Image (cartoon, rainbow, N blue to C red; front, side):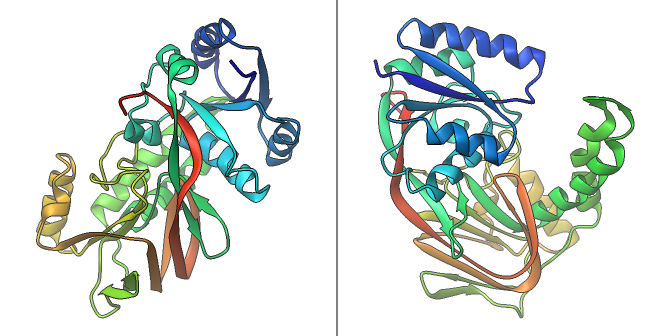
Length: 306
C-alpha cells in the first residue's frame, strides 16, 4: 500500500508509547512508515509540508485530529487528503461516533484494510474548523472553570504526576452546583429557534455524537450526512436541570419538551456573552458565532461496515 506518515503527540506517556508500538507493528507489516512526533503548530506545519502524497495517520484523540485537520485546511490540502486515525487520546469521542475501534491495533488494521469515506467538517465565519462538536453554556462553562483549576493545581506535584488532572472534574462539579444560563438568539438556516428573551442552559452544534469520553450530547449526529445537528436546552430550573442531566446519561435528553433538536446546514448564535468549547478547545467570551457544514471535506479510513 502507499507509504504512511504517522503523526504522534510528543507529550504522550510511556503507556501510550507501548500501545503505539503495537499499532505501528501492524502498519509496518504492510507499508513504509515514517513517524513524526510534534508538540507545536510550527512543527506540525513542517511535517505536513513534506508529507507529499503519503497517507497521513493521526495518533491521538480529538485534539490531535483537530490540529492536523485544521492545519491541512489552512494549507488548502484537506480536500485531497486521506486520513487514518489511531485513537490514543483521553476521550476519543470522534472515533466513537464514526465506528472506529478504540483499540490501537484494531484501528491500525482499519488504516490498512478499511475504506476511505468522505467526512463532513464544521467551519465558522473566520475559517476555523470543528471536527466533532462545539457547545456554549453549561458545558463550556464547566471547561472554563476546569481549566482555571487545572492551572492552579498543575504546580502541585512533580512533572506529569500532579493534581492538574482533577481540574476538569472540579469544574464540572462547580458547574453542576451553580450552572450558568445564557441568553442567545439561535438561528438554523435562517429560522429563529430561540431568542434572547428566554434563558437557555446550553446550545450544542455537532458533527459527532459524544463529548467527554462517551456522553452522547448530540445522540443522532452523523458526520457524513451533510448536516449539522443542533441541540438547544431550556432546562434551566433546578428540577429541570437534574432531569436533563439524568436523561443525558441515557441519551434521551433531546426528547424532553424543553429541548429543541433539529438539523441544518448553517447555525448562528448571537447575544450572550457566552463561552464556546470546540473539540475541547475553549474560547470566548463571544457575542456572535456562525458555523456551517462543508460536506465531504476530507476522507477518513473507516471499517467497511461503518
